[in-house]
Length: 366
Image 1 (tube, rainbow, N blue to C red):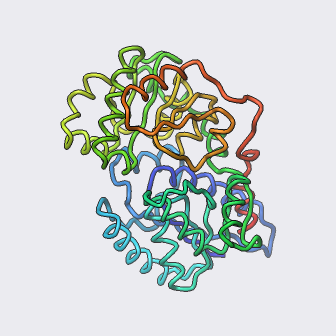
Image 2: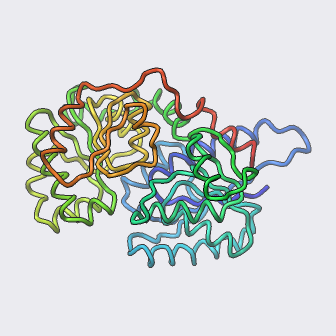
């Protein structure tokens, strides 16, 4: 069986590393006469910064991509169109039995569309998530991909329900758990010996807040952007706030004249690799983010989380008390909520994302 896997952004590197490792283990366990899974990795180049791409392949033990399209940054339409063209060429050359896509990025949608137009079946890992906010490009990407795919691997029962509500056949839906939980268990054991990010930045465990801001809805909206960083600057007067700065966020802060204030108020560091990020997450007092993946990782490491958005795809985290939503319009409300939640914990008895064997289940289904 031949599979082409499409990736392009940091969270996808982590998910793909987990499934690719399961595929390799599956191949190693085969007896004579059984067919192996042959996987070809296509990196669209959606994340092109060295710290946001290359280092991930090194530290996650991911084989270098078989194809690197080098698309880079562009508007949504231009970026998706270039990816579609590049992926189509690879698929015509490799003629895979299935295309495997992850999450909700432009790379995800481009991979699914290219496959569908060539009548190649699509498998979608992390299917069924919904924010119900069609203003988010990620929401459009995930909805369209789900309706293109013939195998939908869902992380939660809520995701299953969403797909059924949209009329997707139950035969296509597979509840497997979350591959990010697999990754958290696997890589979480490695960070202590692999990362010295705390020492590099003179940070003490449980004595800082970690924040990540990168979504277009926040960086492209001057009101939201200003509210977030004015609020976090107020928080930084009480407890250090660490910001690994996404390239998009840096451009936005410079555009709005906020960059100098932010670098004076917060501990701003360059984008970090996955293992360094895990170390920062595990040792934070609280995490404030607009990232879907970081919300879950906060839960995996039992760290309180504030999500600076009006909605989340991971509603079960809110219901279990591990995540608090704050619509980022008022700096004072942001600062108050963050400080108020510093000593907050959610329900310690809930187990939301499977048993840590999602990648194995996905490989078996494939």
